Image (cartoon, rainbow, N blue to C red; front, side, top):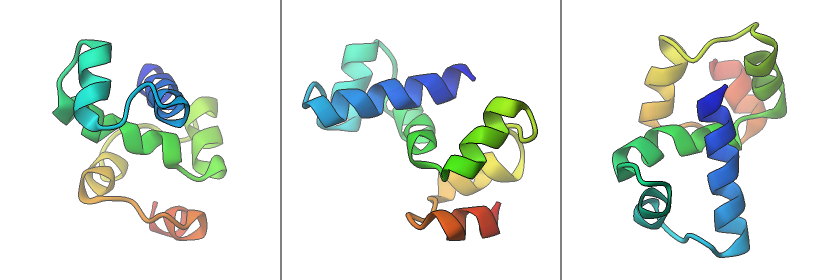
Length: 83
């Protein structure tokens, strides 16, 4: 839950122009840019997947984390099919 919240916070920073890169997010948040690269894609998940994470029907383990590290599709339908 914390990672999902952070990802959406960072997305807000980007939308408002407060951060423009992984490095600038990392510097502002006091973390590493590699952590930002791993977590930020959560802010772009399909709403269905986000709801399942929040409801506890899906967890950030195993296949989901592996796929996120490889890169997730932009298309929400493809995300749902893949995960």
